[in-house]
Length: 124
Image (cartoon, rainbow, N blue to C red; front, side, top):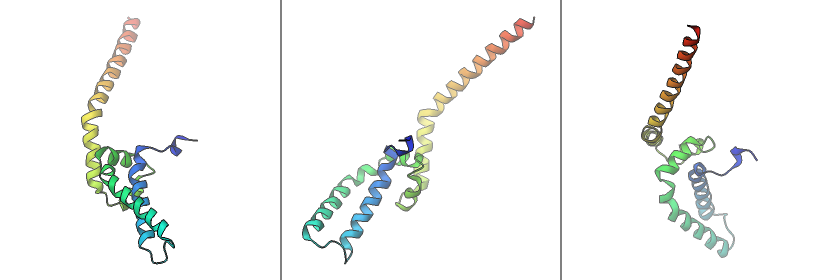
């Protein structure tokens, strides 16, 4: 199984959205469930999905979904404000990663400079 087959945090939002849509459609469809037991089960699933709805809109889940190529297309149809999600990604990058990347690049540049200086001194 390749890495693209593993479930990730980025799939939480689209899976929740798709299951919620499917359950809603099945419950309210006239030719839907034939028995009261199945209808009760679907209603219980719907209730549980609604209970977890606030978790699905957490910033971490939005960011993970935006960065997961398997989830991006569903975000567009799942009533997510894409400008807001993009902003969350940028703020998280600025806050968490930009400084560490800058430090890493500076260290790499300094290391290359030391190598160039040692090459130069060998020529003398």
